[in-house]
Image 1: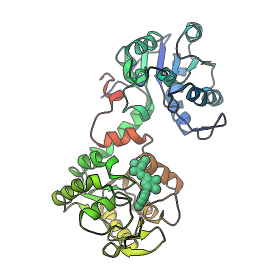
Image 2: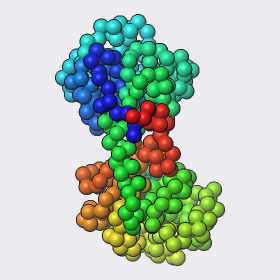
Image 3: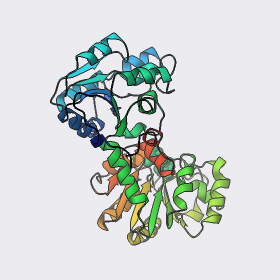
Length: 387
Ligand code: ADP
Ligand code: MG
């Protein structure tokens, strides 16, 4: 069990907390503050425990001087001031006198938000390259390090892995919740255990499939990725999305796990025709799973004790191609099946289609959760000390 934010005494200590405040910003205004709100629990805990708090976070990608202007954390600072009932200061530099003076004058319960850590990526990639000197500098500003940035936990950066190596450390409430929920469903011993996978590209998901297929009882495949499997079985898939580099991979998987894998038996095309998979024409493009497939998948889901969803069943952003994805969510909700949704677009689809509160857990970290589902430890969590 990893050390958590609750395992330290913060009286008169300076805490560096890595948050994920990487929110969408338009014209200097935060357009979705979900990630800010999710960071509040750990921040409020530190405030009420009299820590002096330094927040580090990245925002977007920063490769040039223009990127710096576009990706300042200042709008996030303004939002944080709305939500937190304490003095908050903004350090417009990521290191140097201004920052150090703010740190020296910080009182218990007060906060400094440091400018985007990725400013340090120009020109030498110091943050993203986990530079040792930069890690040492940031670590020198505090006594304890908390990693609460779940969404970047699969990356080894100076502001997460680099600092963690140098200070007593722990995970924050957000990271704790994510890994508790993920482990809660992955390690539970209930069956049938069903995995539904879809989304765009098979190449993004092969490592996830490799890990989950050995443990689950059924793997239901839809979305864009199913066409590579259908082609591997010899079907004509028309102009549907196919990843020819993975045809052999799909063939081998189908041979080895024929008893577990369920593929669509019909599809809906881009021009809204419903066709069986053995009747796809050369110019058809598959955009959703068909009604017979929905019934087949529903039957399997209803019997399941736990389900992991990674990837939508169709192009859910465009009606009516949200039907496959939506109907399966409805089935999971109606039957009260313990369901974990993982993947950036999957989480977005759940919210868009109105199932934001319907499930056991909707994981917020797209890439991080995908990596966790491959069975690998997340680097910035692995580095945190055990209790
Ligand atoms: P996640 O982020 O949940 O892991 P992906 O990024 O793999 O999911 O895929 C999500 C995208 O897949 C969505 O934008 C969706 O429109 C697209 N998609 C789903 N089905 C198809 C399809 N049949 N053809 C092309 N794209 C599809
Ligand atoms: Mg995605």
